[in-house]
Image (cartoon, rainbow, N blue to C red; front, side, top):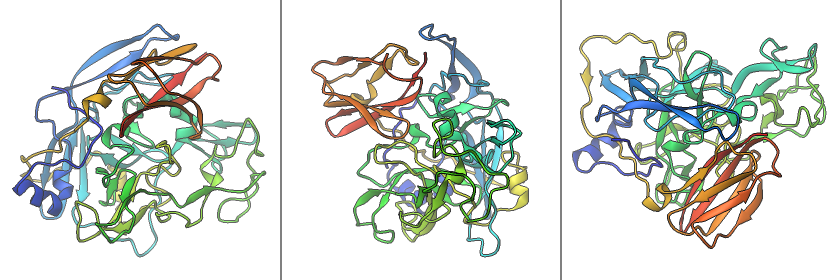
Length: 433
């Protein structure tokens, strides 16, 4: 039985509610209690040739959650229970990774030198066992090549979402790397609702043991009765035309490329600076109360723009807020499980999705000249949004099937936002030429 997504804060009642608030690091995980097997679609290409469904023999989501007084141990294959893919221009397909993941149950702030997050590689895990990656794509600008390459100068690092966003699947905004690791760089859209009038759920945990929430939190960090608001990152694009200095003011040797149509502002991680103008600190989190931690915790939040699209720094930024051991970093997903653990067999988060929103689809995707949006009820508004979050076209349909001319669009990643009453759904749309 496949689970439904777009999560709300719906939990099992009674004793489980009490346990959840006290032990969220144990109860927040999406345990596979039905034996669901993972599957994905392989994009055959070129456009409109469709995709091939692939059924794996490996289970999806979380296989087990075990713990002692100090740590929680999660076992998962790193595969989502929604249909992963299809992937446009992607180097690989998802494969079983058989992760064993250890998180401390008592995270605390690193008051000394904080640990940098990797540009590429694991920074935590989502509640479905999919690994969370940093905001880089392992490429940087090379002055010699005047291009972004894997063996670049290592100074101006390319932003993974900007460079690779069009290769992410439309269901979860994830893709597989060259080792078959299915992962998220920015926003695992299947794990939370957007927009929302409720506090976002926990979508994962960082390696330092602190929770990662979706993009919505309390407007007053310490007041659970305050209004719900979208968390705003404190990062902004720098006001530069040349890339001769880094965000800390130091000189770039060698310099990066000047701002141009080839290398627009926002191409690189170093195009951003922390201004302290948002809700979140330089690590992309804050100390606050949440539904799961009513007494308060440090928590990271996904950063998105007002249209619900990924916004820098996406998940974590720069450094971990909490203590992270070098051993944990070196053994991401490869921890050894000790003996004497208790294992959690209680309830699991229930995914909820209104049927009106559930019965929305767009095809073909990837598309070339046109795309058709089908809805169960007549939509109030259909918006086309570019990768920068700008609405470039909108429609007010009169029927449940709306055809949109995409021949005038350049190749790349776009978003189709469908609004029906108080609900909305945003679907990634890949345009290929």
